[in-house]
Image (tube, rainbow, N blue to C red):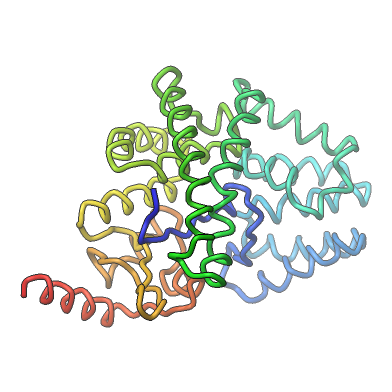
Length: 322
């Protein structure tokens, strides 16, 4: 269904290739050293790479991506004991995340057909003994059809207009895909439960995407299922937060986490739909793994100011009363 609102889907976690430069520590020395460590990995200067990561990890060691990069450096430097330590730590932090970045990030490409890949597969198998590769592959195709036309809409909308025949064509294709995907995913959930991390790994967010793009009735029906999946660690809480916001916005209630963005049809400017607690939204976002709303707004080329948000909401409420 064509929508007048937009949601920025954070598929860094879901594998669409959008890679933001976020660091697990605000310490400038940490950011500098992991950045240099990555650069040395790419440059095949593995001994130097290990030095930079060791320095960074002395500050903080909670990033599975940086730890996987350090493991790659250790393997390539012939430091098998250190490699195994890093691999175990990366999988301890996030087994699905560690396996996913190894599979999809370019800096690991040279290791795909080496014993290192076997070590990754062994740890993944231990973490996810019930992993279903066939279902994961099917959901990967579902994700592709869910995102294919949506990925073109911003460019087409800016070039031809959001009410143009070109946009209508994209929506016609996307609406068909959404309909087929919704039928498939809801039947899957009804018969087998939510296809989460332990079953499909990095495709755990795909069923969420389909529900997120379905009709309100479908969203409300399956919200408890997705909530249970998040509580069980089978779905990222940030995905659940996006669905909650979408449902609240569709019911003309203030959103909780500020994920729902609208666009003025006259000016083309983006803005946040009403937020329940504009001054507390960042702390709420942090509890579900979402970044600051100011950073989120920048992705849409506008800014977020709590006072301005309150004023906008009060003005809209007054207009509606009048």
